[in-house]
Image 1 (cartoon, rainbow, N blue to C red):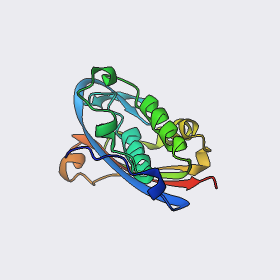
Image 2 (image 1 turned 90 degrees about the horizontal axis):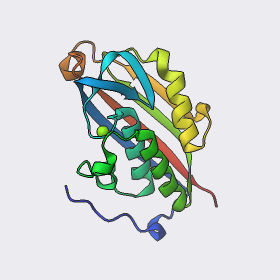
Image 3 (image 1 turned 45 degrees about the vertical axis):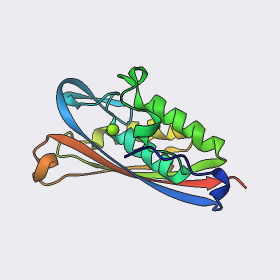
Image 4 (image 1 turned 90 degrees about the vertical axis):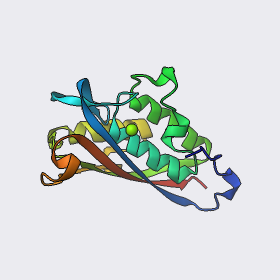
Length: 173
Ligand code: MG
């Protein structure tokens, strides 16, 4: 899909805007698992050009959608060697700056991780703290929920991790 140009800021008449993000990455040998900037031990990581942090990627796409900006693949193309292995929290920081440039702040973010492995609960608080710090909101404004596919399909076979996120932006005026 070709990259469209970003929505003109004057088209943004609304005080509140929502955005939706989704991402999936397959597991790959020899990689470290990073979700929400948290390194999760004792499990193989996800394949991808950056650190393959599917959780942070879903949050990025939710913010970009809400702000009327291009999606993550257009903003940070995987053909660009400067993004190889980069921490996705750094990409989220850049997206936050773009959102602020457009006159918006982040209200809250709600995240669902869909994975039969790993168990996310022990890491949820650290993930919330990372996302909240990067977006200049409190951990109360970031929800991280986890569910499984009950052993079914590609996620049930523990071949990958999917993440959905929604974000609410509000204008300061
Ligand atoms: Mg991704």
